Structures are given as C-alpha cells and as structure tokens.
Length: 188
Image (cartoon, rainbow, N blue to C red):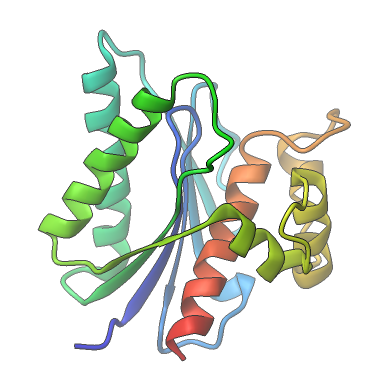
C-alpha cells in the first residue's frame, strides 16, 4: 500500500524534530507540519511549526519513552490511520559521546514506528546534506542557508534572534524538513 503521508525525523535526546506532509500535496514548506521538543520553553507556535517542552525525567528510559510517544502522537495526529512512510536520519559514524544512549533512544522510536506498520528508511546524514546543499559535509549553517533560499522563512530571526550560529531547534527543524523532502521526492 502506498503511503499517504511522509514523515522526516531528525531524532535526538534533546531536541527531536519532525516534518510531516501528505503525499497528495505538492511539496512545499507551507504544506508541511513541523514539530519539535525542547529542553527549554519553546516559542509560541510560528506558522506551521509547533514546539513542546520536554519535561524533566528520572531516568533515560522514561525520557526515551516520552520522546518516542511524542513522535508517534504527532504522526498519528496528522495521519490518523493512513499509511505513513517514515524517513529517519541514520546514525553518524563520526558520533561521539553518549552513542549508546542515542542508539537506545532511536531504537525505541524505530520499534514503535515498526509496531505501527510504518516502513522505516534510515538516511545517512551525508545524503541529506548533499540533497539540500550539494555538499555531503555541509555545516548546520550551510543547511540553514539552503533552507532560507528554498523557503524564504527566516527561522533564526524567530527562534534564535541573538545567535551567531545555527543551534536548536532551528538546525533540527531544517534537518527534519530536508529528510521529509528527500523521502517525499524518493516516493514520487
């Protein structure tokens, strides 16, 4: 069965982001719904972007469960019972730090997506960067510049007005947008 919805998932422990679009629409920022979780109080809803505050947790397991439940809720809120194709940023082989925590967190989300019957396509970060910018080693700032050119939406002015470099949630939203666009284009 062909999916009616495509979701691009930039998954993390501190600021996961989702971009969701119907396959029946032409791809564009205005047709997408974007969501993110943040440790700090999110901005009010801006255009089609909705942020939720990530609550405090007593354990990583509680945190991972909450994040994956949030992701599944947002997907079902948009798609209902319609078929969904999930595209998720794959692990970076240059990762360092809490790589096992990152893997456990993403694994739980993938498990819940699988249980819901959603086909999951992991996409390497270099593929998404090259898709967005033509450079597989693009920086967050270069990804944002591509987003700004493609959409004319200045997320930095809204979410990080004093920042000199792209951070969360802007970089996460941009990544989820391009993961979704990559998935959408690969299915058409």
